Image (cartoon, rainbow, N blue to C red; front, top):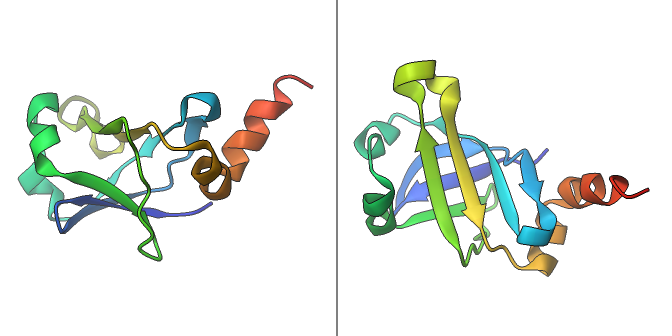
Length: 112
């Protein structure tokens, strides 16, 4: 599985395998593995996340365009560090297929 970088502005705040998704909706999500810099971001509300310029790139620094935005859900104060999840919405289908072929294959297998 591929590993992706997560940024707030120019700052690397974490990594994710984006291990799950919904191909027809262009959505991917997964556990966020935070860097030390995540502490400055932690606790941001959904509204303030829009102003933090969240972005995702491949490990090779290719941007993952998410036209519907990127959101981090952080329940770590209640459930521990493993309870931080990132979701990217609105990834174009050709890009989705090239970056997340395992999600596309799993989706198609549902109908076989």
